Amino acid sequence: MATLSTPNESRPHGPPGDGWRSQGGDSLPEVFRSVPVPRDASVWRKIAAFAGPGFLVSVGYMDPGNWATDLAGGSRYGYTLLSVILISNLMAILLQHLCVKLGVVTGRDLAQACRDHYPKPVVIVLWVLCEAAIAACDLAEVVGSAIGLQLLFGIPLVWGCLITALDVMLVLFLQNRGFRYVEALVIALILTIGGCFLAELIFARPSLGGIASGFIPSAQILQDREMLFIAIGILGATVMPHNLYLHSSIVQTRNFERSPEGKREAITYATLDSTFALMFALFINGGILILAAAAFHANGHREVQEIQDAYRLLSPTLGVGVASTLFALALLASGQNSTLTGTLAGQIVMEGFLNIRLAPWLRRLLTRAIAIVPAVAVIGLFGEGKTTDLLIWSQVVLSMQLGFAVIPLLWFTNDRVKMGPFANPLWIRILAGTSASLIVILNFKLLADFFLPASWMARLGL
Image 1 (tube, helix red, strand yellow):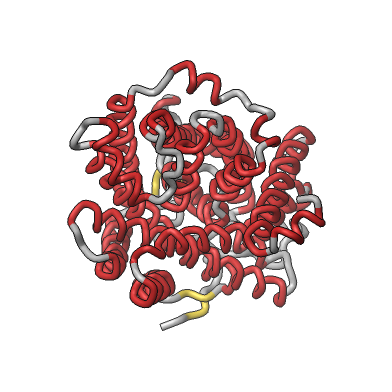
Image 2 (cartoon, rainbow, N blue to C red):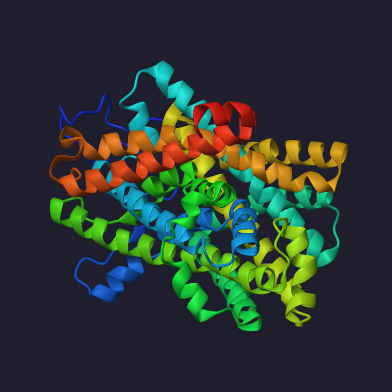
């Protein structure tokens, strides 16, 4: 049953005239400030206390929606597009730092901040767009998990999609035990993905010189239209809008001091957590592209972009029987990991924008149903060969929503009235503004390429 939530009166609110229309309320109230932070402890103990939210966020940067673009980039162009993965990862680190600042300083997640700043009609539009993006992201994760189940166990994709609904119960069980249990499961799955790709890279024996040169940006990327298209796809699929809402919320699960010094310390340690986790995501995304370059591009298989094709070719190409199995296991872990964080993001968005709470099981079931129904319908009507199209469409929907999350984030963290001494300094404003502009422009280009006829694109000079 839906209930209207009210702010927790025991929670310290901002002073009058702090730039917000209301005093706000606890984000994810069932786990709000539930993780203790030692006051007088060593640096390492504090790092450990803040470790976790960054890994939940990093999951969105290595979800199944990224796999197709990384596979296509590596198989077609070798190591060249590694520089694009690096640049997109650096932009992600900066944006997630801003999410940390917003959550720690204002005590609001991004959805709550939008509700407390914009007129109600704008809030409703932003909420609808965000719900569409979460459903699209969840769709990619459901399809990815279903493909993993099919490759490993031969389960038909339709049944695999339905099985993914069971993780709703797993999230509820773990969250009721404590938020640290959710974080522990996510980290375990991330380590599984990393271990699988480390083994794959050892089997593939990639060129170290090629990897090193690939991290250096090349003018060829801008000169080759098809390479540029894949590069835009990598950039567009990297920053997930729901991650911005998620991180600004779950950083508040830490019970840090609310003094200026305590907030400054929390921002430092939470940023360290997310930066380390996102560098691990860089290893995973880079690993997919490097594996495709070494296994496929170097052996003449330069049109591999579907996950199923990569699975079928890996073991014969590398001459290692377990290679394909490890690839499918990593895919399944990636899909399951992403669904865990996607359901949390759905709860944060609905509660933050509308100030309405549903029973957690109902909210998660609705989020999963919105993803499962179109996946099952498309696979049932058009066959299993359309799964790649589903993944592409999910990335298109995400691209359409990204600017509506990034721009408010920059607006709020630049505002000295709302952020006080924690407002972004000039150099961060310039870097963040440039990154946001690049992301929005490239996503617009991706959408234009997807929807507009080639003749129109030529007239526009795109």
